Length: 109
Image (cartoon, rainbow, N blue to C red; front, side):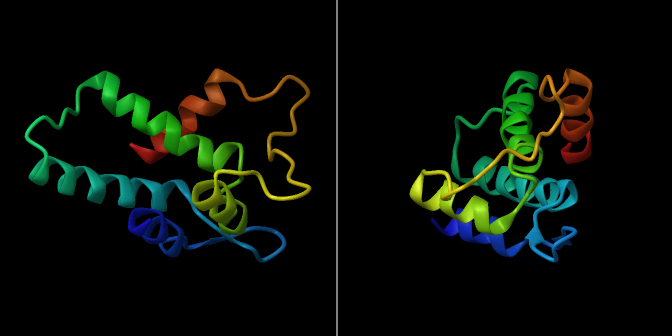
């Protein structure tokens, strides 16, 4: 729970409706900080390419699917449920492309 709260309170962005949103820059900062702590306290910590990409894909999902919306992410991360009436922020007819996801991942890394 402390890591979730740290993530949510680190949000610096605003969307078109003036909702607070997490940006790729916010995620990059928090993920970097979390990796430093994990490396310091966990002897088995790995930052292999696989683990790095896996973590970044998970983080990118918060920005792409949820639009980084802190209110939506609060429910999803704390209560493990989607908010009532929630809709994905991906509006393209065929979903997100690999290029879009990779661009988001690069912004985080």
